[in-house]
Length: 397
Image 1: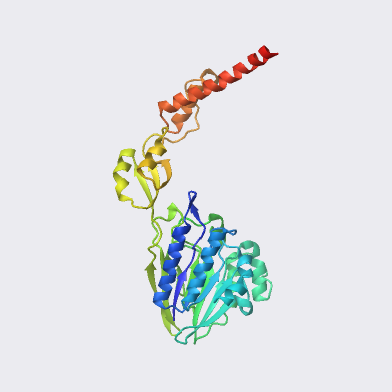
Image 2: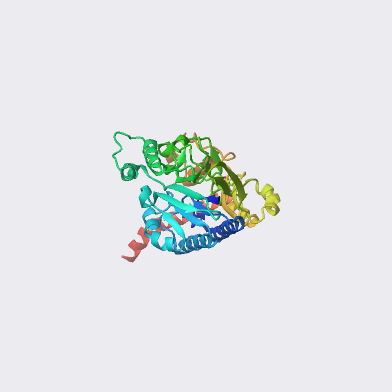
């Protein structure tokens, strides 16, 4: 049996206000091509199809087209909801998706109601897949009671509730089938990719890898965006995101996991690189140094940290040199640290507004005479207007 494991597409995600839908389309086309070339029996998508629970129409269209194209390769396509997805919406589309050969699982279900998916490979081998969509702490008890059919008495720990659910879903694992688990969650000691939603990745949501059964041939995880294998009694893998969603993920290597397994042999995992999508890079230097790098960046999206004092027009100078710079800031290692102490030149009432503004700029490592002149002109205009107002009104009375 051969299958692909992918997750964390985050379709609809923008970067510094820049749409990446075209890149996401190319990435998904590449995943479809890999599924076709490798003649996989199944494609497991472990959550976070979208970047938001209310995706745009173009984002939804792209995901639907990708899932249908994957099903068109002859593979079983099984998808679970992640913390960025709207679980109820995925469940609502189950009948339509099922007719197209795609299994959607938005919320936690009992084995009999769709929490376990059975399928057969092209060669006739059987597979049993236990699916666990993202489960917030708010609904953990309710889901545990639904699946296990008994109250989770005095078990306040999130990981215990997930153990109960997984125990119920994997209780039917067989020795004559390839036994699989797919889940969207945080495993303790996992390495963050850099773009995850922190509020739903912190330790309160983390579970030990030991919650997965030892007789699972493979555990396909989503949520952490870095490709990694977790230390566990069974093979537990995060596929990582196929496209870096933010500059915090610029060092990640995007892949999909090709997994081969039989009921009697361990899973063999091969990482297949995803080459579509534009690289994210961070550049540091003075304007002159950045000018020397301009010919080396290609079409990469850039975050630029300038190692010069801030001044009027600095951003425009950088973007003229580097048109793909989506973010331009003063390098935090270069900027003068902000202190809470008051300037030593005397009480504020004894200094002019221009002096106060200049001192404020100094605390932000901004030294630009043009900015001082601009402030002076604006200040003069405001004060002249306020002083002229009463006189004009008096003259017209």
